[in-house]
Length: 139
Image 1 (cartoon, rainbow, N blue to C red):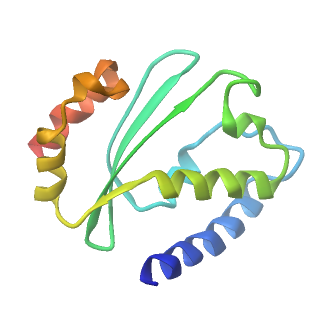
Image 2: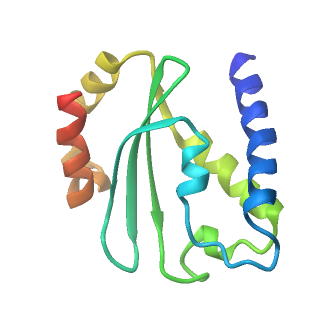
């Protein structure tokens, strides 16, 4: 139940947040304002290029979170750029928030990163993720 309450608060704050920053006619392309709403970003690594992935480590309510997601260079291959309404932006934001893997402590986060065979996962082949993983172990 507490998870639902937290998400509800984020949804309300985020909805107001996006109405203030974007209007329906604007071209949405920057994920940063959305990502900052999920908690304090401790680490962030992004692929460089027209398309790629972003990897983030969060601290929020004494928990640590890991989020990875992909993005593109046009409305045909990027979820945010494809949004046409505030409600679509909110739906994307909710979806990204729900993808965060939360850990009870920094120790638990580090153990998860250390125990995972990243070569078997798509992230393990990303230079940006490899940089993030090194930094996680240094936290």
